[in-house]
Length: 295
Image (cartoon, rainbow, N blue to C red; front, side):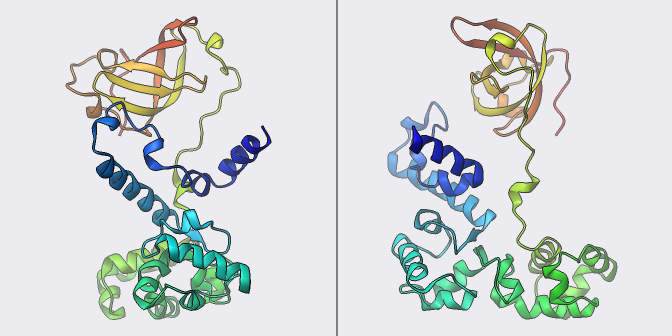
């Protein structure tokens, strides 16, 4: 019981750090996942987890080896060495110290450095997603528009994007000697240093009056999150423990060939309760008469 409570608390604090400990194939992702070859499924799901970890970024001073092993350029052995080095030498003070870890050479460092964050580093860019190879470009960018590294640390760069766009990003990228995508990434990072892309995701939908299937009534309107899309419809989490089924025939007033034409996993949609079977814990949903979802 105590271990379960700790696990739940950790998931609330940092869901990604806790969920990477689970084998990707053990997470239910659809009714046909067992029809795939296990090696191919593991490769595909592992790639998705790696993309998520690299997209969010990792605090190297708090991350477990399980989380670090999904960072680009770091294998399991190197991840364990990072944790061991941290335990023996204390927290990392700069990204350059990563090169002192066994099994992390120049090539691995180049791959992983931009995804590893050090929030309290003396070098302000070490706490952002700016890659060490682009530090000089980032400094030049700041100077051109009258900013300093202190402005980065104090989140005082609200006008940076405006000034860059006004100057012309193509012209600026050429003068700084980098590509436009690289400059876009640097500007985004400096606007919100150390930002967590999960902050831009829709907030959880919480309802104080609908907590259980017994609280549901026909024709009730609710917002929910699409959890799974299958050939015959999609399952929607409406906050009552049991997901509701939005059958393909109830998705729209017009004919649709497949549910994926309208919805994808993670979409937040409005639905109407069509029918409830409390004994069987089944909830039928509909969107008839509600128009097409906004994209």
